Length: 243
Image (cartoon, rainbow, N blue to C red; front, top):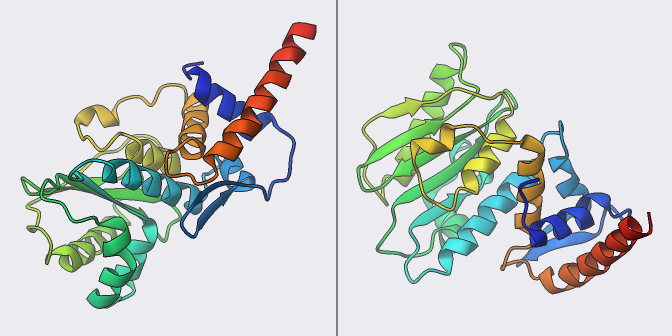
């Protein structure tokens, strides 16, 4: 299947366990994620915005454990607030302290964007070059101008913090934009053109993403979920043996 033992055990608990869909399986600070939220990662479903943004939070907290963070991961609400005209003081209050840790080694900034045509795309800023990449698999002639305006608006808001990029690259491939956004977010912060290769088995990817969220170090409910998933895994294992 392509999952290690821990990821498989968590995936079984998330997907196979018949329980309360409102059960909270991830908590960090005031951010909660329920079983029902994670079930949006099931095959052929579109992952909910809260799942995409939780993955951004998980990767942000993973990177923050370094001495100096190299990446910022920003939720879709950041771009939405910028585009609706939020003032910079509110950006600092809402986002900078929580999502943008102070660092002297910043290399990349990942910004997820939920567009009006109900598709995800992502801005990836290479701070050192500087360049901005539009990681967009749903770009068309009809929406190109609008999206370029959106990107420029976000860049203008961030120009106080890093250099203005010099050009935009666009890549096209899959139509499942939410899964692509999650895949990019879970790429451990590094960036290369290999990101745009095949995602492999999509069902495995979905289970891996769900397991990585629930099994994240920043999940305050991880010990309880881990204990429950162990019990479910043992029951599942006994069922297979008995059969």
